[in-house]
Length: 500
Ligand SMILES: Cc1cc2nc3c(=O)[nH]c(=O)nc-3n(C[C@H](O)[C@H](O)[C@H](O)COP(=O)(O)OP(=O)(O)OC[C@H]3O[C@@H](n4cnc5c(N)ncnc54)[C@H](O)[C@@H]3O)c2cc1C
Image 1 (cartoon, protein in one colour):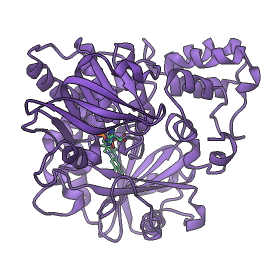
Image 2 (cartoon, helix red, strand yellow):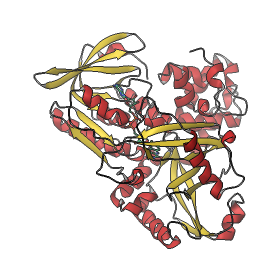
Image 3 (cartoon, protein in one colour):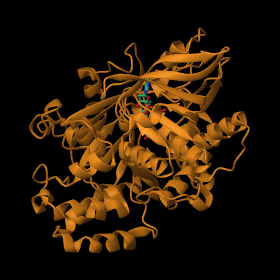
Image 4 (spheres, helix red, strand yellow):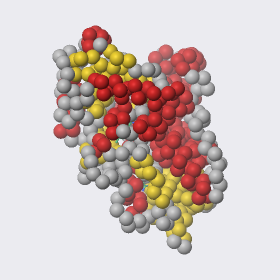
């Protein structure tokens, strides 16, 4: 995947996608596989919006059953199955524990019914059946859990991913199918011909120049920026979105063998405590905000809210000083009449405007492939070229052809000749899949690149030249926040390693 903004000008694309988060990336891959000429641009780095600050779960969303969201949960559970097949190096099963406490907002029997539905809706795509756990068994396995009032619990399975890497992987796969992609290219003006959109003027922030990109169809896939891009295109209607703000904190590893689904003691909202990158992730908040997507910040009371939930259930208690990092994003949710933030619909919607602009909004990361299929069906119809979707059984770029732990072992063994420790080799395979060998090739030029960037962390220096040359990483944050995640919890590397 090479950056070549010149390839954006001088021809007419079938489809121009504005936004390189997972929604745009999914459509770029689907449309390229259908043989369309596709361009995709992002005003910042790919996945620099919501798609790098999610809870990193590929999940059905057990909690949506409470609001009767059976269709959404069904679809998400089956998309989970598809992703476990198509990107097994980036999406992995994750065990969840759901403790039941006396007086909890939801009675255990309601949870049990919910879990039975969850298993049934997953059908053949179920990872493993949920099962009840006794209070003593839970306390034995998780001595960190407060025992007082604990009446037992349950275990169920979902999946975990690395959100920005998965997004970049989908883009790499699209590029391999001929899509022209460029980060740091921002739409500034829409070009109309006889009242219909014909293209956009863009600013290449790296080359410091303006380009004209022509396309027969334009898709606005800008997540929380959807309304502002619609306004740029001359739309005058009210906002389509009602974004909500979600904060996560990163703390030292607490529980490594499972994630916890907990209800916040203040308001009964669902929260997760998740093992992630050798650390623990706690999230998320869900609140209306006046902050825009370009100026989000994490407030002390949001951190306190998350710590309160952790400390209510788990020992030893955490303090604000224990927080190693935090991140925040906006959920691009469809505007609804009223309601609490948490009950706003996670469904997605494709808006079609009079000028011909398509705008995709809402949805979840988990269902990006299915959303892309529906969007590309509409694009194909509009182009007068209905073609079949091919993404369901299409392996992503780094996916090894065989699945499971055996394949990880095979790929890891293949790296032996490069002088990497088994842990480092496994780290590269878990992040790059079959492309781990391409990363390791750089060690032939300089074996010292086999050293970790931060002692004790798995990320290796050798990843930097690979990301620069094959993943369009241009700046420090592109490497450390999205293609690796080290900068999110080792702020000191943000100053040390790169000059930019
Ligand atoms: C806190 C939180 C937790 C979540 N957890 C989960 C989860 O665990 N599982 C799950 O399935 N879903 C989860 N979600 C939802 C999921 O993350 C989002 O639905 C998804 O990432 C949205 O992707 P997107 O591509 O639509 O938007 P984004 O990722 O925000 O991408 C939009 C892109 O458009 C670009 N852009 C904006 N304006 C312009 C312009 N003028 N020109 C060019 N480019 C532009 C931006 O730079 C950005 O990169 C979570 C969301 C949040 C906020």
